[in-house]
Length: 185
Image (cartoon, rainbow, N blue to C red; front, side, top):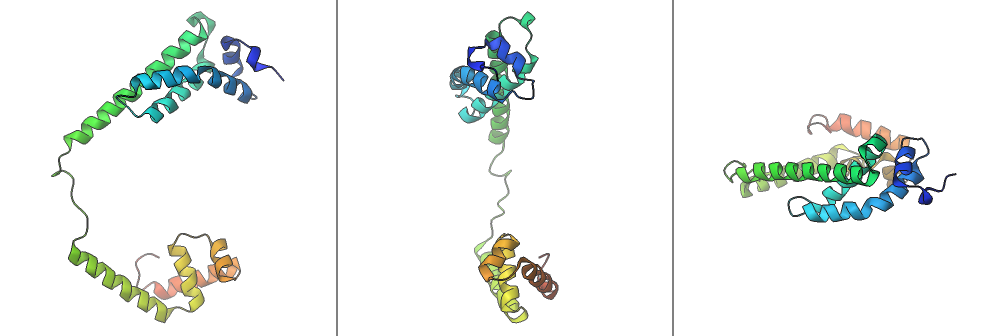
């Protein structure tokens, strides 16, 4: 195993494309993190600092395999690549902010429900819940509640102390029973 800490930046850059380059990447990133953070700080007035750091590190990793000695020192090459990527990030952020500022309040429709609509929604939800309670067995109701909450079948099975297959069967039966009263369950 190579000792990457004693290699030059140029040697590390040549190691990056190899299959076992994890340690070389880690060494290169540790050497250039300071530069990436400094450049991100420089450009962060116009873009998100974390986005700049992420893009800077990505630019470093993209630059390493593309480096060739005829381009000068690796540190200069990497610095230019990182800086260019961050400039692109700043330009993207500026365009994004410009588009947002061009939108007026009139351009953004208010889709929030009115108080009357909220009352109707709550009444409909209560009615559907009552109908579900009359149509479904307690096990089917428990399984459907778990599905609506986004729980995996294994968690529903554990919660109800039944097998995963029983959950699957109960959900299938419940869906068939509820098909007429609920849209796409």
